[in-house]
Image 1 (cartoon, rainbow, N blue to C red):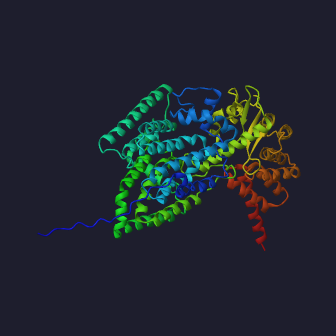
Image 2: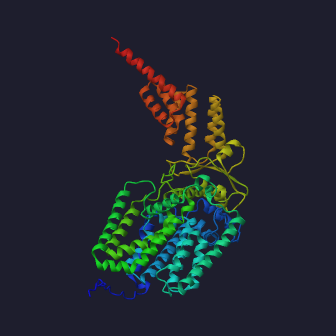
Image 3: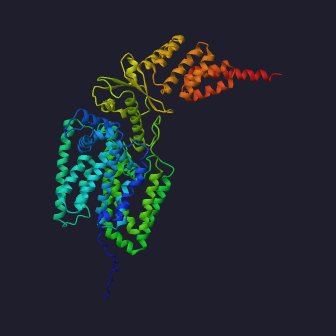
Length: 625
């Protein structure tokens, strides 16, 4: 009777017990991935508070509320560990020594990396465990974990989720459950941790009773947390930001669209790619595709590789589930994308990707690590200056946008502290001008109150000041994009006289306007306010040109344009002066520049038409015999 022989199983040598972590060189190699991450973060004012930081800092430091059962200053989320406890413990340090707080974040990232390495090292080789443990570090979006206090919610959920898994791998039910609870109290994403924990391949329990025990423990923690969360949301009136829970257009977006958005953007962020297409996207995608094809080819032709894959398939599937669920948890915030939110899911993708590539060939794992390191290095660096408008990267916030806001906060705080070491109770500080899309970074006035530890202080918008310029203000913040310092303080009287001059210009009262501008210059004590004083010079040039005092108008017009090249009033005054001087070609060039900035400037359009017509007449006369 014929028999069919089963294919022989390839024997894979058993792995020796790993050395203690502190003596394991692969643990240190995994931690070394922090170095490029930190280097690419330098240049930003790390952990300088901005935006919602001020809401929580005000609550914890000024209101001194110790309740854990509200938003802790947030109107959207209940995260008592990452809001109340974190800001309560580190609030003074965030304000006094923000870079020290960034160092704390780096240390916590290092701890999470070591815990994940220890978890995987018991089952994988050292190089594979190091590659997977360091996977979340090799992404440009992870810079935000170092850079922003509010991002402790993502750092905390990652750290305590890894701790929960680490403890579960060692059959420590109580400490694993406690770590899971803390992770949930950092951020809601930890519901994925609760789902993953009972099914982790490293939990060597009996197939039925063991897993059931972990399922019950995770379920109890999850249900208890969810019940309290719902109570706090109702009691404190918490709602997702930007009307995400009430916008009918968003609510009717199909779930499949939201999931594809979350998975696709997470993959891009994990490989340090922008949501918007970039030049190197194709290169990175091609390399990753080539690595995947090489792994498939290795499994097809090499029985040893297939045996290694068989042994690691549980980890590969578990890591893939981690990524899929972690990324899917971002669907409720559609369409507000923030790349750093992919950090949690990236750990799962790292386990899956390294599990696959290491089974195929260590060289493929090395290629994957090198590709992600290169893509991270190609990402935009921290901005060195406060740009007039944010770079469009199709994100609600990312590292570059965040650093821009933090630079503004740092310069504003420095300018105020230099002029006003203290402010009297009830003082007001105005905002004359700030870069586009940055005013929210002041926290609606909470920044001023937190900086000076006084809840009676308040911001005054320029619209409010213009409506009632008689109101007393200590100073007004002014932004000047092309000069240093970029943030200066304007005296209230100086701005008041400038507003008076503007009203006089509109009434064609040129001489009185010049006098008001002179008073404005005299009232402005800080001559570093180049743009403001240049604005006065441009208005003065316009008035002097209207009075026929062209020789006096020209130097003021040129001074104004040196301060701000987009000052159309000064450029029109200069063009008028040039016409009077007979330099019509130069005047036409100035008018063309002006109209490129402001095409509907009627006086400039009329003057240019007049000059062009006279030039045509001159050409016609010259052509006659």
